[in-house]
Structures are given as structure tokens and as C-alpha cells.
Length: 338
Image (cartoon, rainbow, N blue to C red):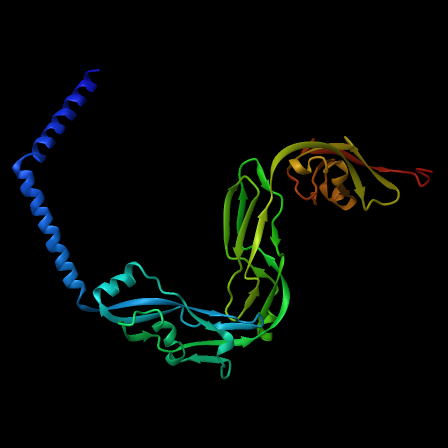
């Protein structure tokens, strides 16, 4: 309560001082001074901007209409640097209000010699002048000649492959990486085309992914090579981990006809992590624990450490109970099983 009263008292004091100043003769003199100061500044600015000045600007350059089987191996300059002269007011308008449109070069309009195209100022200067005021003088353009080199390539279809690292958040996993399209056309000179087997994406690094993600990814640029399309959509389905346990029998392989494997126990519990969407699909029949006769002979003991060579897709973090089993190789009579 005390602090609130102090704040109110301070506010009233400041308000009173401001009001007294605004009603005093000093404030009148101050505002008159400000008025004439801004008027004088305005006249000075108008006078200054009425003089002629030189300024540099950049105009984008775009090449369009390139056929799919044509590969641009040396791109034209991405922009024109122009130097112009005009009154300050006009140049200020260029700087603050007016943006320049790209100079569009249509591939079909220019003919090359030995796969090289040169476009001289007389062929594109008008596209620059049309964007300038009538009073503006164009002093210079750099570069003064636009050129590019191209080759006509053969084509083939190659698969898309991810370049980068992906990791899901805790308790999640990436069930797949889906590209759309999963293959793209590649155009290149025949000698280069023969060396290309895949289309790699630009490096991608995504961490702690916890929900299904869709993202447009550009393909890696290679000099003298053209991919159509140049980017693809990548989808990363995300699933949540759950745990499941199944019983799997041990099976002997490569045993002689008169010998058979006896394991104790004959089945082990296999506990693993799998995505919730695949929980019902994965069962004991998807796991195979094979024990080879040759491997048991090399052990030199009667204990076998359980292991699985090939896991079903989407399964991870596998553990066994028990992790080791006792075994013996039993000799059987020829008429066993009759």
C-alpha cells in the first residue's frame, strides 16, 4: 500500500511539471525553434536531392525454357551490376520504393556456337532501360556480356538416396524413409552418365524426431549433371517403441544323420522392441535361432550363447532368457524316428 501511494505521488508530480513546462514561455520558444529547424532541414534536403548523383544497383538474371535434355555446365551471371546517374529524388525512389524485375533470358531466343552462347548488351540492354525512368542515364553494366555453356545429354533413371543423419527422439524410432518420387531422371554427357548410379540428396541432419515428418529436399548439385525433378519429398514415418516377448525354439543345422541337438531348455524367451504399429505382425515364427553342428564342435564346452543372425524388419534391442543354454549332441540309431 505504501509503495502504491509513492508511485501515485511521483506520477502526479511529474505530470504537474510537464504541464507547467508546456504552458510556460520557454516551451513556446522551444517548439518555435523545432518548427523552424525542421522547415530548414526540409529545404536543405530538397535542395540536396535535386542535385545529380551516381549510384550502383543490381538486377537479377534468369535463364528459362531450358529443355530437359540440355545441361547448363556454366551458368550465366546471376545478376547485372548497373551504374546510373539521375537526380537524388529518383535514385532515392530506386533505393526505397522500386525493385527491379529480373532480366529474363529465354533459351530458345539465342543460338550458340560449339555449345557456347554469348549474349551481347544490344540484346538485353533494352530490358534494363525499360525499368529506368526516362531521365535516368545508364552509365555502365557489368558484366557487359552474358554467356553460358551447355551440353546435350543422354538420360537414365536412377534411385534417390539420402545423404545425412536422422535420429528419432527417446522412445521413438523411424520405421522407414520414403522418397517421392523414389527415382529421378538424370541427364549428362554419356561419359559422365555412365558413372552415376544414384541421386544423392543434399546433406540432411534431423534429430529428436517425434512425429511423422514431410520435407522437401533438394538433390545434390553436380557440375554438368541435371536431375529431373531437382528436388523430392521425403517422408519419415515415426512410431513409438513397445516391448514384446515370444518363445523361440533352438534348431540344429548341418548335423550328421546319426546325431541330433538336445538343448536345455529347448526354447528361449526373446524379448525385443518393436513399433506399436507392427506389434501384432511380429510373432515367434519371424525369429530363427539356428545352431550349427560345426560351431558346437569348436566351442569346447557344453554351454551355447544364444544369438540371432537376422532380425525381422523394425525389431531392435533384442535380449534372450536364458542368454546361455546347456546342450549335448546325442547319437541316435539309424532307425530313429521310424
